[in-house]
Length: 411
Image (cartoon, rainbow, N blue to C red; front, side, top):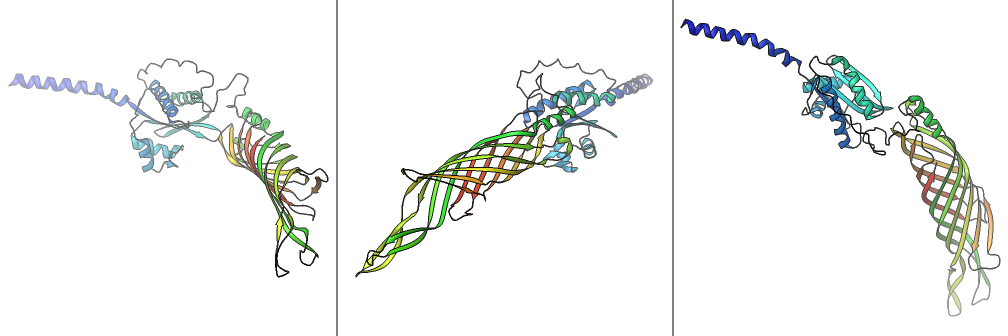
């Protein structure tokens, strides 16, 4: 009996001595969760998260890839428009909810990509431009939290990416040797300044044109009385055509760091439209008679073909409304209005004498809307433009002319 008690006591003493030796290992295990959506492509986001988890291993943290951070964010009010917010306060609540020692958040932000590292009672942040810089930022922000345990072996260096592959970059395309470093705020500001300024704008469009001449006079001889009947009717015309635009534009563009996303520009130049029109002017009366008397008369219309040329001299303003999708990319809508007095030339097809006419309309106006994409460091870029040119009948010898067109314009 005594021997049994002695053996039991010895065994209990051995277990008590060995238990504390396991405690430090258990306490040394720290977990990390990563929320990264810096790319539009979810596959690239997954690759970025995997690389960040490798950095966490280097710093002694155990990745917790199964943690449901989105559910925790929804419960703690840290979701906005379907994305986890990039604010340290709400993120600390998410970290606590999933039981992680550290939470790494990488997200697109104003002026670049925000990297946040949130730990218990501490939060660090850095603004970078590329995926490689985001990894370096995580490694830097975690440096003070490195575990005393031996870190996992660093992964082998990735092979250089082929030219034109954008997966390793937050910007849309890789930087070439002769391109400015857009990660430098001064270089980015200078790139936007150079992209704007005084520049030539040019474009082309297809259009539909309408013509109206009210109260067009015509004459016809009464078949019963022989008198000359004078009447008036409206002339209508429709047709299709093409046009060219050439102007000088002063385009002051804001930079992302200024916080402004709208801009205004001025433009002076020329527009040339050429259209073929089918025109129906009144020709004479069509009479109906009964028992030697005219019972009714209706205008009879002619069918003519005209070639119309319109040359407006334009002075206008444009207002851009949009947003910076990237530090180097602005997208939005540009609304414009231009005073457009115009020379009008017409040619009646098939006539040899008195077939051409010319006149000047001082009341023209053009309205336009552009779907625009402007990139820093780029030259003139094509934009989609929808436009309408209205030439009112400011004089009796002028028609109402209106054209609606769609095309491309470069600036």
